[in-house]
Image 1 (cartoon, rainbow, N blue to C red):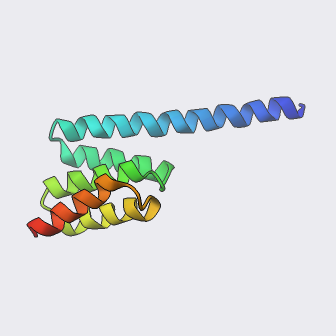
Image 2 (cartoon, rainbow, N blue to C red; image 1 turned 120 degrees about the horizontal axis):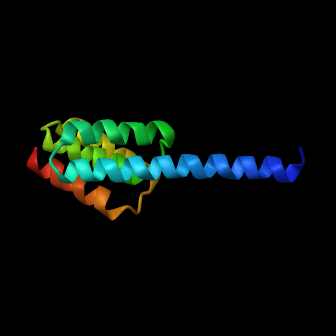
Length: 102
């Protein structure tokens, strides 16, 4: 097998991982939007198992936890999203709102 075939296998694997990651993230957002916070959290955990630096997944996990009254855990998630991308304004905003409500 040549380098071209090896490269193709690498690209296919990357595509599969990215597709799975995005598909789970969108499913989690949909569950969150339907108020199914526990299931949404589980979905975001799966996304984060695949790619731990997915800042939107951290923030949406925080939102779901916040809806379940788990504000301390939510803040930790918002902080993780901020750690990954300190210019993620929505993460800062939701952290501030959650702190304000506590």
